[in-house]
Image (cartoon, rainbow, N blue to C red; front, side, top):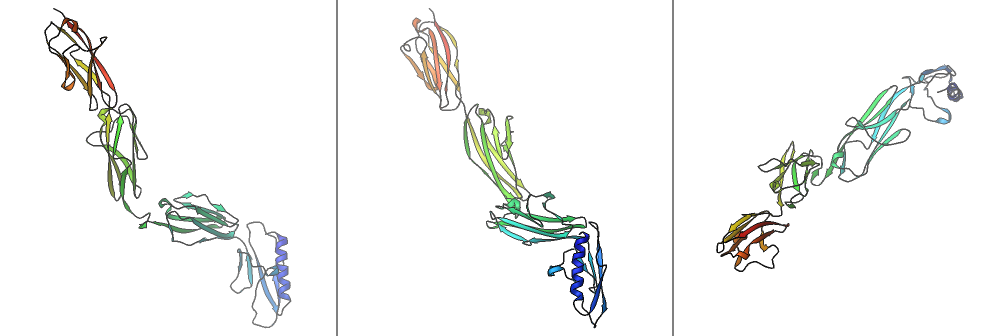
Length: 355
């Protein structure tokens, strides 16, 4: 407040009072003060009938400012600093349903004008501000928005704050009420091809929010794995990675598990036993085609570079090639091709028939 404003205020006040009986005077008539200082004025009754009721007014009957204080008997008016006062609308506790919008309005007064902030867990929040109001808005509340919010106003004269509790309700009860975990997986069974990357997703609900981890039944997790946000990723899987994987969700109220069965398919890996053989005419030829891979596996024998197999050649069980009595012209290279739903591979066997 500068000196000209003070003089205008109280000269007008003096004229208003003196226009009526009894007669009063105001001391001092005017005052100049520095920013942050205070000043007092006394209204003294000079003459007139008793009793006298004293009343202070501003020019044009404007209300007195917040930093203006009147003494107990009404004779002394003091203009000075004022510590903050805070009011929050709506007052807590505030109950809202999951997904609904929320707006908390904090109004603060004081001299000098206080700064206003909204806080939660000691962190200052982003708000919409006007001259003496700060509004905290949430477009659609979630269970994580439940808790205690603090509006704080501060100036050179002090600090004031008001707390308001927000309770988020949804479903059959409060969304933030204690609740044991419930784990679910995106797929109960996963089939992958050897060498590919596999991802398994686990989601968990509960309050407080559960901690999610992955494990493998009766074996450690493959060394080429990562777990991020409930997603287990296995890189370049092999048949040894097949098995049951367990999603574990845990909080202070219990635990929950969900399971995914992984099957890793692989193409056949084929060998011939033996891969070289020497026979005499009339001997029996028996070649075994061995294959490791995902079943079922089928076998097919051919002779390399020839139109067809020798007369009397037959493929018997489990990929065996049988020729009952070999001849000289049965010499050559024989090929076994093993095939499954993933792929195929081949193995060669060299057969020599000499008299």
